[in-house]
Length: 264
Image 1 (cartoon, rainbow, N blue to C red):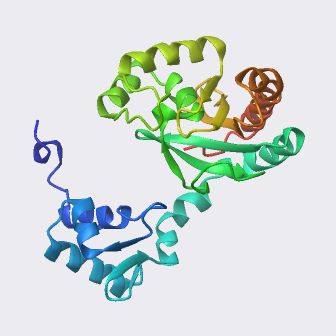
Image 2 (cartoon, one colour):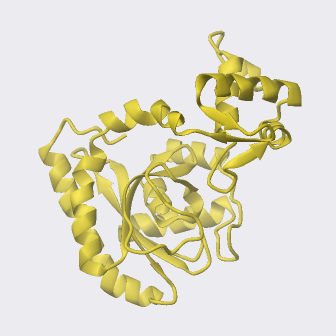
């Protein structure tokens, strides 16, 4: 099935292309030239220029004549979703308590396509080369929270994920095949948590636990992350995992008491 046949007659290609132009900007490339945007989106230079100038007219993009960058106005595009989603409000106090207890950064994320997306975070120190904020995305196959979330998928949804995912090697330790990931996810399901040791970035260790709703479905993941210079994998299991699992349980108890909470 080609790309066009998979879309309904309602599909608006210009909207898709406009969103692709916005998504071309990210933390690693906050400023792009016209050529950069054309290359990143697969658009011609002329088409990329029209989209960029239209976005500039609407206030979503600024330019100095050579470089283009997003403005803070793009936050409006996600505001309705973030303001109506109460999961961050539920988990934030738990993350603050957990981080204060163990003196490490803690986060909660949900699965979106082949990525995890951070919805809440308490940063004790910066341990990654890039800054992590609410809305930050990382590939699920290389993260502890991704492993927990993927392990909670149905067989059908996991098969769909594996069909779409790209197993890029972000470090020499990254899992780079569907078979290896399946094996790891089976271990995660059995033990109830995931430890990722320098698979996303050299020097970064993280441990994650699932957060279930009242029906027992995995709807989010909570993690602790630390630098390898401060901890060993064994010390993460011994010292960080118990309070992490306790926090996951406390979050689940709050979710069970608040049936109207939106978690995705």
